[in-house]
Length: 361
Image (cartoon, rainbow, N blue to C red; front, side, top):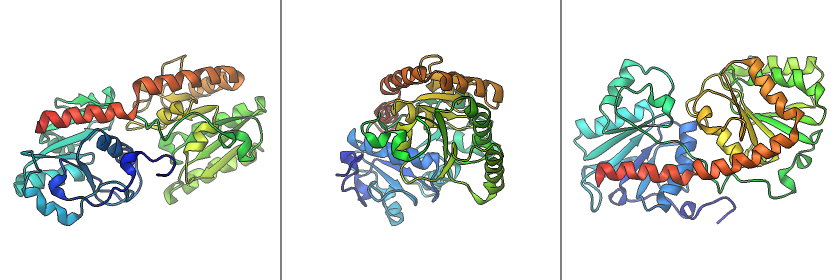
């Protein structure tokens, strides 16, 4: 077992469909928030005794999975059950579940988890109304659902995201200038508010020479012009060494531990796990109120939450911590306690398992 693995991650592989009670489909090759949720959650559900398997591309080999040919086994219910659970998180996964259940007459119960914070299309509403149960990742997302639902908040894996433990978990290990680090992680694009973060850093860092800023995340071809304009602004300000684009890193976890402050300036989010990952790493957080961020942060105790898209409010909240690193350290410790008490991934797994049991008994 390697560092960061849970016992449930070791030795998992293709499983026999007759031994599966819950199927977690993943119909997207590219890494996304939904994919990340499945990757982190399934091992914890296994630890709690749920017989669950994944289906689809883009998932690590250690997760239990069924092959596409295993779908032919869905006509027979699992051992000791009358139905299986098909847990969808995307429209195409809901549609597949409906075809399996109503066209092919397979004994399935359908669940959909919604993270969207917008009015759903008529097609999506049509799909949702045909689910046997619906969950929302936060209260705001639930407000856009027009059906009965259960709020089950995402959690963070406290084994994978943890406080600093070694010299590698410090800014000194990075070779970057300064003694304090502020960061913003996620795909570099307008929706994520990367431009707001860069603008704030250009304005604030000259006043606080001990701080350095890092940005990590993928730059897609359609957002290359956006990223290039941010880099040009940084160069014009002469701050290339103090506002650094890391690109996509192989392992983001050490970077959370190296930060003294994490900033999540999104204009729009579904749920958004990065503030929880930062708090679990003992890092204070400044975030917009997009997604579920406002439900994660205890204002003035674990960080600050500002209106999405409000540059002035974001800049001022960041400035509070840049001017008082001791406050960032204090709120980082409070954030760790809050993440452990309220947002442990095991809590999400237990809540989902209760929903499963209510459907298949």
